[in-house]
Amino acid sequence: METISVQWIEERLDGYLRDTYKHLHMNPELSKEETNTQGFIQQELDRIGITHRAMAKTGVCAEISGANPGKTILMRCDIDALPIEEDTGLDYSSTTKGVMHACGHDAHTTIGLAILTILKERKNEWNGTVKIMFQPTEEAQPGGAKPMIEEGILENPKVDAAICLHTNPFLAPGVFEMKPGYMLANTDRVYITLIGKGGHAAAPQQGIDAIAMAGQFVTGVQNIVSRQTSPLDNGVITFGTIKGGTTSNVLCGRVEISGTVRTIKTETQDKIASQLEVLLRSITDFWGGSYEYTFSKGYPASWNHPELTDVLTKSVTSTFGDQSVVVNEHPYMSGDDFSIVASKVPSVFMYWGTGSSEKENFPWHNAHYHVNLDALKYGVATGLHCITELLECEKVGQA
Ligand SMILES: [Zn+2]
Ligand SMILES: [Zn+2]
Image (tube, rainbow, N blue to C red; front, side, top):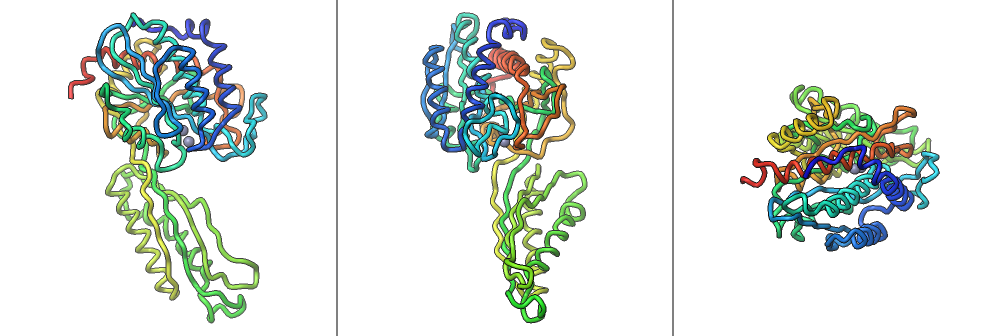
């Protein structure tokens, strides 16, 4: 199939893209609860005339085949929103209090539907099968990719390669970013309780101050990444919550801390997991307190198949221009359960520029996060181009 230009998509589908995006953006649903979103996708697929089946309770797999048999390519579009109160002031803001599409999954769903529309219209111009994985529950571990794989999305027909486009507010529309090898990080969670002994604030020697223990722990933790793992390995430890104490004149007997650990290499991940506990043990020993510690492994680091990443980088730049792909040097320390798909079939995760030049861009998971609607057509053009490139690529399906 010949490449569909951005201009053609704008002329034919811009209204559809904007309306679909706005509908989804105004009606966000949390992970595991995407029933209306699922219903909307199913209704759209019926209208376009695409075969589909429900998977992982609130997900959908759409499948379409071209003129002749060939390879099978999967594109993942996640569909869930976040527990955030939207504060963008947009006239198509969320109508559900406390729930917001603040990661762009509404945009992912929109381009998935538009790509299927074009594939259907041009069914006679391409060979093979395309599956679009409308995946629920990316934002809440253990995630929706795993159950969709367990229910067979990668089989019958067997998926030969997969791609994923994720919005990026710090890239301009028309710019995509990818790299061979590790693209995203291991995303693990830690839950810690420091247990001391309450007492009078004026007689700390009679109790065990959990806030003092927590203070030493929190400042000591950064020595793990700066001194005990290689400066050349990526590692991040961030505590997002710390809770303890009841009032100013009572010695605090218990502090609860939660956080996230991001790494690329398994050995760094293991080292941080064990050293966090060594530090906890030594500090609580010193004070005579005790601790509880849980290191909960989350999504694994996402690996981009080097050869296919190279194929797509060259093909996108030769079609859409030298400026259309940025090859980033380092992985991002964010995570995504597309990594589970990538661990099963050769895959490429890429960022898709959805930033605005006229106003400030905010990061993912922020109440001000917004997607530039002018970027939707580029997502459709590049997503579709990558799918057709892989359908025709001789390096795909050899394994
Ligand atoms: Zn997210
Ligand atoms: Zn996301």
